[in-house]
Length: 104
Length: 239
Image (tube, rainbow over all chains, first blue to last red; front, side, top):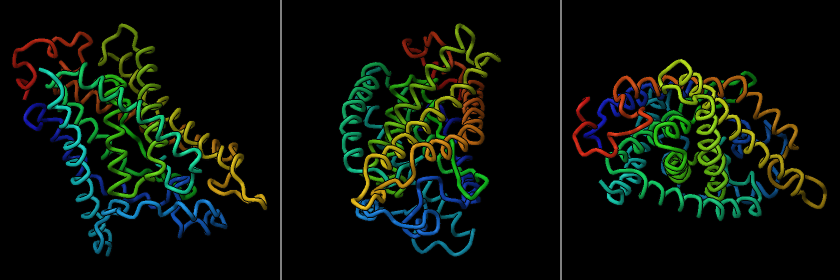
């Protein structure tokens, strides 16, 4: 998977290292406020929203952070890079299924 | 643009999952049958690129944030179905592992960000590029506008899904049950930040990445991709 098109993967590695730049934008995207932000942003928590907001309980790296690594920008940046690496590897793992399925 | 759980009613979220299952089935079949083995690493790198580029949050004046997606780059390189599949894989992993976007909402998010964006961007690019070379100035303009239009149409369908909740689902006392602003506000808020900020960034990201791919692997940008059909070792020989 990594043998051909090596420069694409090198480019991706550079992006992964630069990814903590994304942490500088601290605002939450429109319509993505967490339960803790809703009261401030909206003024109330809709009943249906409260019911389903925590539907999925198995998030391992919440918001691209490593639990326990949140003290200061340095740790957050390291957690962000680790998250990017894990995400990229998982994406490649899933897509590699098609490497077996596709024909030469 | 990743809708979290709770913002869509189950009556919206579940049918969107039901829509995306066959769409992704078609996409998977297209990738399996229409792409060659040697193209799969490009799809993997493109999907991974999409994953990472979505982590580059852009500050929006007023305290919000937005980001590019990278779907149109993949659509230009490998076609809209492959882009739809690749970006969906990224979105599903973001939801499951990183809590970015909901699980109930994953169908809606794949519909907006992977399906709508890939197809809108792909056909916009195709229309504007015409017979020009992908790396020509017209081809680059087509890539920029393709990225811009693709992201903004995705933002629009997301805003419409958001806003529809307000009008369709309210408690007996009239308070909204899920997303809490009317369509007008949802569209105005989503579109202003994507038309002015995230859209141009998506356009730039598409152009720069396409240029990078073209400089390193010109064959990937060929409109008559002989390297896909031929059996020589042309693919890796640029490295």
